[in-house]
Length: 245
Length: 272
Image 1: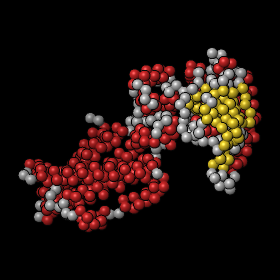
Image 2: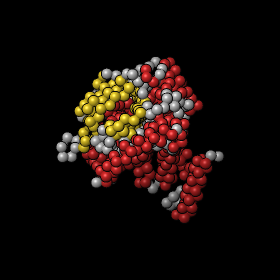
Image 3: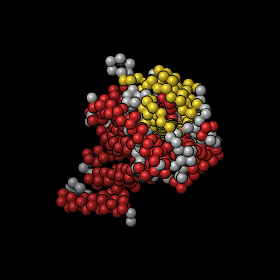
Image 4: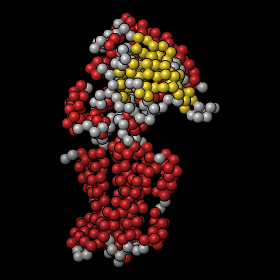
């Protein structure tokens, strides 16, 4: 067993033991045991209608993530390539990043209405800022000697940006994408929880309203499982991009 | 080819070259000049000078990376404007400039691939250059897997593969330990003999200049001018063993006597 795998298994076992201990302490009214949750999750996945909700969330999340990546990287590049724009734009980005996004949700709803567009917009808003900030930082951290080397190798401005600047900044940009991935997922689910009639967030809100602990636990564990697996995959890609450095 | 034939032809010329930073007469900095210098075709020329004397500014101007404020710079008879690095000039910097996302072979191929050479020609040149630089076994390695000296070799290989007629080196061994520097110096001499290129080496190490160069230009404190040009007596087949030649001490001694006051002046300026 590799060291990484052993650590993951150890963390999982500790979490399950803690979960079981908390369950024994608080009882059936507030929580379900890991085994009951697994059973409920299995039942939920096989239930009629779950596929439609999952597809809805997946569509909203994938669209929001694509928008966040494209706009985030574009904003980061626009600010990173121009010193004045960077100096003016960075404080704006940082202040918007630290703003609790939920406070602008009523405005998002007014603009996009209830349904898919507002979920996508709210998810993307969460992801754009960290991706833009990391891209900007990544471009600033590119060693100047690499940019001089591009000149020495007679590369034009676009060739230099595409062949040197972007690959040099890529590992850090990817770290921003990992963060953006998690925040976009949060944003999309929040959007579904408060103003939607479909999707996993909506199902979760409905379960909370009906105090359906089985459903709450099953949904939460499925979302956590997805987020953790995706995060592990992205982390592996992140490491591969750094080529042993 | 003997030395007399190699150095008969002027390769780079600098006439009245100055560089001033800033436009406000109150705050502008006169970094360089006026410089009068001629590099002969095929010679190994080193420039030494105190810290902050404008060595790197001179390097950028000769490389075509930065314009001179006044004066004229020519490479093979054509003027350099500082807006682009002309074909035929290769540059190696002090810092590690290898691209960490590319393998050694792809690093070396980078410039010539983008210059539009056929893949067969790229492959042929890269294989030959890797062999020349002792990197053949590391073609598929990434820079992070190599030592500092090996990474600098990759950068030199990426320059050589373009077959430059003028190679500019800005303290290329500055970040390496003394033994590695001597070995890399020997390799550089070997490459110089094999390629027949003109070399301009900027360095702060007097012994490095004395061992490697045919002629050494000594620069003054800022604004840097050429105070003296010292010729070395070594033949073209020289190597690091010249450091034990009694004349080696005479050369470094002469360089230091010219530099001592300038270095003190530079330190006094820096301390103000």
